[in-house]
Length: 280
Image (cartoon, rainbow, N blue to C red):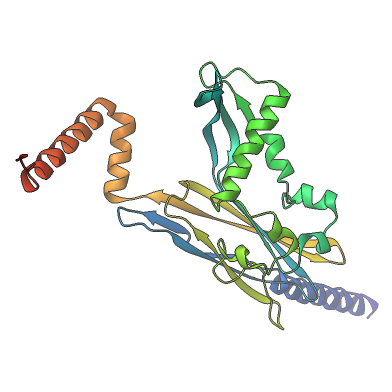
């Protein structure tokens, strides 16, 4: 009899554990990104990426979207002999994402400590991005001095902020500021409903960097991240844009000849349609 009771107790405990695990699984946040693939064709003028999820009870949301790692040449202009404005220094910045957006339900300064912001890659200065990026000589890729590296890497980050590819600094402090809506048409502040459900969007420009993008949602309660979730989406060329891009990479002489032929044809056409009038 005791054996039967013991077995029944074990079965009941296992059933309760399974039920509890199932309930916890149902509470796990699910991050959804739509569309999962953005097609860039000849008529591409930008796209909105919709991101949604469910925050645990009492938790705030910190969302970070990073674009593909890129290599960009940066030129520093200056006056030569006090007269001519031209390039005086240049470098190639490597290992730096070409897109970096941070959205949250409250100012990140209110939600996370400085150390946690840096660890999660959501601090206003983009410290982790600056640390992993490096600036080299464009020709032989030799490393620059630490001072020059910091100068060129910071300059690229600031350029990305101006071009709307990185979150503007003030949006970290004032999530509802008017100029923070450029990157998020639905508003840069995420607003979960009573059930914790939230949805926002990220605007991609017409010249959005091609490649894979990562999306991470961190749910914060009492200054601590209680759970995180991640997803991805891709931006890729299709149709004629893809064909021309492949030709430019694989058959550069043919691509150059075709481009020259098109330019000559356009010039001749314009000259025929709009002939130059003779002087009188």
